[in-house]
Image 1 (cartoon, one colour):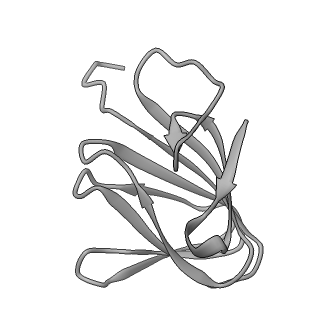
Image 2 (cartoon, one colour):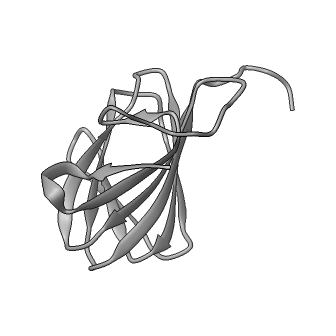
Image 3 (tube, helix red, strand yellow):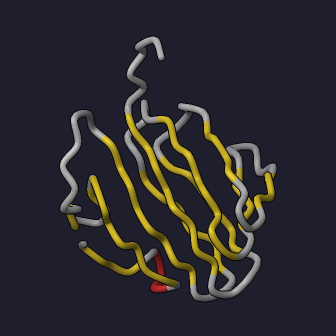
Length: 115
């Protein structure tokens, strides 16, 4: 699994599938997806880049984060919480409000297929 530092060296990103900061994950997929295990070691604000047309799901494993919208509004997500983001923009901006925050980030193209 490729690992690299998160923005401003506030933590690290383990790339399971897709890519982050030039690192490519080992998992093979049938459609374009990003799957990252993100750890934020201190209270901080980071931006995670995605292609503009991707859906994104954030699962907070440990700690607390606020998802910061384009208008500056924040949606808080606590431990074991899940957030879905809209396809609006090319990044997700997060603020961790606790040390040692851990989240799983999943993103990909909408398949537009029936379930």
